[in-house]
Length: 195
Image (cartoon, rainbow, N blue to C red):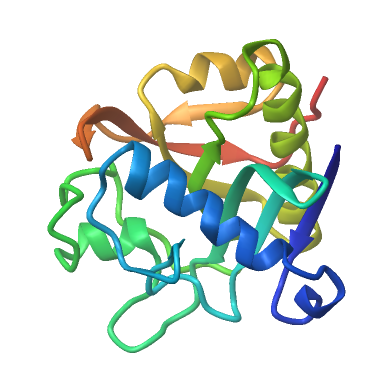
């Protein structure tokens, strides 16, 4: 099992891994969760998949087992910035505007974590190991990018799991319904060490 952080600068070194990440997102979010998201050629993508983002992929023999996208809160592409801020500004009709207890930051030290998934093809006995590798590489990548905090939307009960594995993850908004699941906006401090 390998973990790779992809960017537009290095994706040419990783063969089909970048495309396979979007295919895995398609299976996870469109086929399995039935979310109405942009898609083409069996790949899911949206307006936040830009050269400013990074994608962490846990993979084995080219198959993407888990992934997450990291986006700087300072980036803009047309009218869009990052998912949490755009939802708060009323630009996204699928995420409530009151998802965050404070004004969404625009800060070079704060990045957004989004499109987090673990493939349903990962056996139950390996899920925790895959999640740990994903979290570890996400933290390493975020720190390398200069982030001191991540913001993200995760399933309601995930903050407890995150704290169990040493991630300083704190709910910063109300529990909400996002795409048929109960989720919460969280802040994740990059200052703590993982187990």
